[in-house]
Length: 355
Ligand code: PHE
Image (tube, rainbow, N blue to C red; front, side):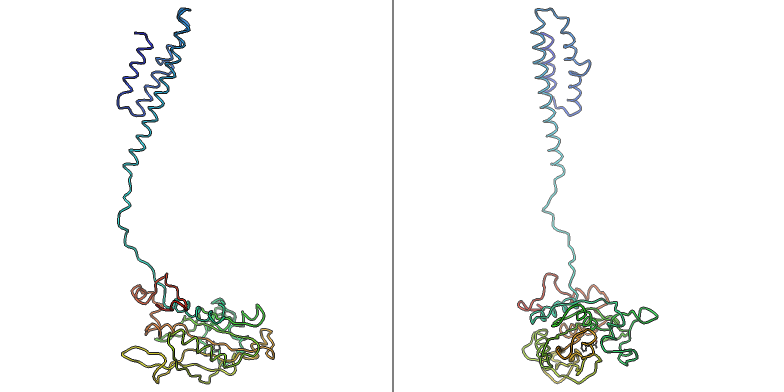
């Protein structure tokens, strides 16, 4: 048998075995390496007799190409097998049951703010915001509450500096000032947010929530205020009929001023809104004082309107039967789980607010 034939036979028999990548690479270098069988054959060409030489060289070339192709396809085959083996081993079982996870709840105060915003947006109010850290001017002076005015003491203010220039806003009313300073009348806004007073018991918390309302236009009068609050309370408590009473009051920034109570009764341990002869105060309101309008460069001869400030936490307590205000801010997970709302259940007036 010729050398070339022998080389080929041997090679083919090796190739039939179960080879891995390093074994096939070894075979490759045994053939084509510096002293490999094929390389040695090439070196032999010069020693072959003239008559045979051409034929031998051509056969050798054919064999070289053939063996190279066989080796490459074997390498390819081995690599594919290795990948498949790996894939087989690393299979992920996607049928495993999900791990139990805990979904968060929307805090009743956040839910109530969303409900309030939704109700007022239906009648053309837009939402404004102001910062919790206010200056003394926006919180008091611009609101017709000058230095030494007794109303300042009633607010139990948290001041942030010795000069009493920076403070934590004691109500959302400074947003009235900010809103009116930055654009021109008419104004029709609500401003929900956090407010602060140094006070703490079952119905008072040092941080609490209010929503301010402000409607300034030509020819706005107290009946608009009454109609607006009447609509709001009915929508908020989701009842057809309510009892509401305006009690004369005093705020430096409104004239006349009133506090609004709603009528309720307790039936089977639950609060029923709109019936009975008990009264609950829920907000302060009035016609915006001309001095406030002057302070923000609005002409009180041309424009007037009403403002109100509603205690949000109180409304939430009433609507959702929560009896201690402090529980709102204790971050008790069990409490949140019980009183919280589904995150995907966004309140709208059409679908129902609190379902
Ligand atoms: N800012 C007042 C308070 O916190 C409430 C209020 C707002 C009264 C707007 C009248 C008009 O007590």
